[in-house]
Length: 279
Image (cartoon, rainbow, N blue to C red; front, side, top):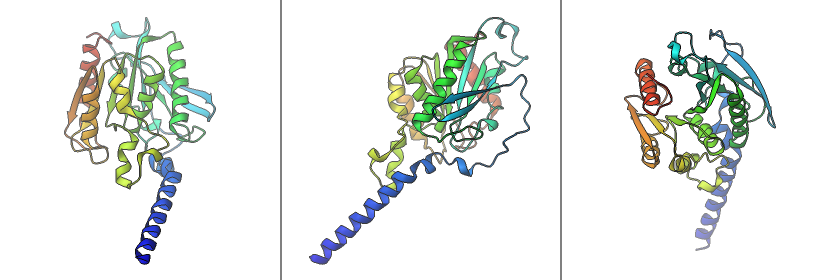
């Protein structure tokens, strides 16, 4: 009996130490920025790109604004304020990687704001839900102050971890639509993989709660074969929306969307249907 008690106590102490370790290193898992291989001066060509720096409590944050492409229909060019999208990228990316897919927006007359996470790329600070929230609020406030942007047609678009960033922003600032691609319900939903209690999560990013109260249109995009964030997350998010649409692609996580031409058309159809742009 005494041996059994010693085994139980030893197992408890081992589990307690394991939980403490995960509590301390969880941000290295959620934000693996040190593993991202990229050039700090990427050789990309984006017409009229504007690079803006904001100062938050975390330090200087890099942000890029890409205006609507010249190939957009004349009626959508910013002779008057145009809609704009705020984009949040995945946890193993930097804004340098993301300009191509945002052509789905800029080519139809929508400006795009890419906000780098604190501690990623050339931005200062360390990533957390709080620091990312501050960066995105600063970016949003800048965007709506621009004379060429319509503050009533701000779209929030997040991929993977970026879904958490824009859902957090949706709680704090108004927007016309929310687009979530390959996004999770919450970080706490993954704690069972590590056999730890959900209350140890420092950056919960509770997206499910956000979409359940968001009154604007929501587009959920998810790959049915996603091996990182299972499709069940996308389905659960969609089922909680008040005004949602679900797009399912035949792909996994890192190859979503599988066809950018189809993706661009789907984005255009959604934004037309909800009245943010006109055909």
